[in-house]
Length: 400
Image 1 (cartoon, rainbow, N blue to C red):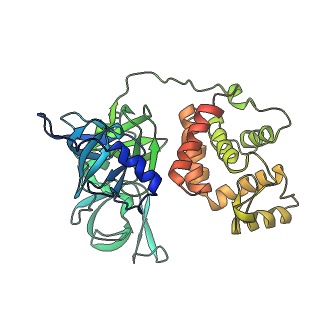
Image 2: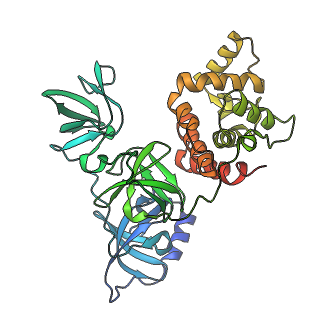
Image 3: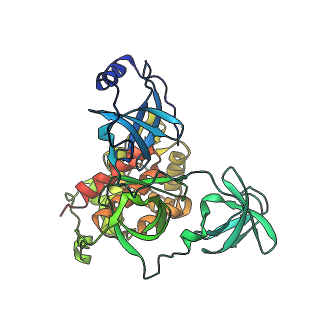
């Protein structure tokens, strides 16, 4: 995805120019080669002054390095040619290939990659029928987020992100041919095989299951969720799990100081909401970054409030629900009971996801990331979700 940014401030520009004050990268005898972006976002700068940012490429993007010298490289991505930091990339082997096109192909047979609805019009408000996972359909056209499909002589509309090439999705998670893999670099796993839709950032060494490979695209799964990333980002995992699953007694133990808000919150998540330790720590990480475990705290100029910083209409819903149920909305107990009510009734996908994460350190990361991205939805969602995932995995989950 190409994202054009406004000109940088003078001081930042001077720092950027200092990096590229050496001569322009010179070609070597080896010629050009492919490299993969290994940082969350790699800026590509114009060769001509004032060296504006031409594009910001996400993790896992494959570019062609045409020339390089010292810390700078001349890279090509699509029709974008500019200067990037050598330290932001990692060279791929000769077998790796450039990122596949993101253009949907019409007229092909695809299959549903989840249970999905087929509408009579390209609108979620129209009448629909439900298709199960793995049903073959013919894609007639693409318009926005919807694909016009044909099946058994009938035409309808479904979300394009709910379809995958039949050559990829014929491999199902239940097949015994599934291969355990780990990521070679920090990477992004996309909702769609054309690297579009919602993306989740995972760290280097993240464990996944490889279901199928279609060209350069790998179809992977973890915790029942299917996604796509470049096959070049993966290697076979032959190592045993580094973090053993805690016993039931360990999962129930409360590692927080007795009488503290965090002790009460964790006990509620484990006891009343019946989350496993990983999921509880994922929620705890978000509450920590939202409110520091404080129930009586305003945010966003007074429009947000409480442990989860419920905002605007959600704040009103918190107050009304607690009042109607005889609870004090200023209390930890009242707010946690409201969270227990709110998740399955207003955010069922979040509630379902955090309940099925593995009870491991990586499961804590997954729960924190998903909860932040889809429930809290702060500004800079990807960066915030990554930060909270790391905090859940590296700081909270290891607590004894």
